[in-house]
Length: 88
Image (cartoon, rainbow, N blue to C red):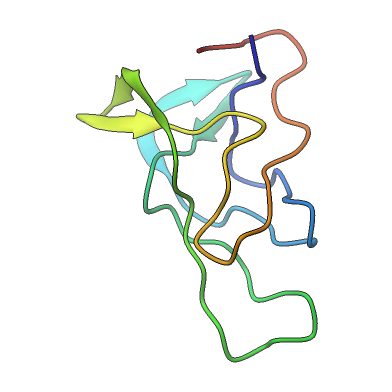
């Protein structure tokens, strides 16, 4: 199963998750859900992507959580994530 994504985790283009559901933490870090903010990256400072493609069967705040392998709205894929918490 793929690693759960959290605030501070990056995608394949270098975009960092900037927000999530503050009431749910993985390894002490706020968990990412569909629609969490992602920093501008890949030489496109004007675009503001968000996370997408989450695991529908695992939710935080009623929204699917994100895991490694999900693609953000910019098309870059989530990488890294929690070293010991996975979902899918």
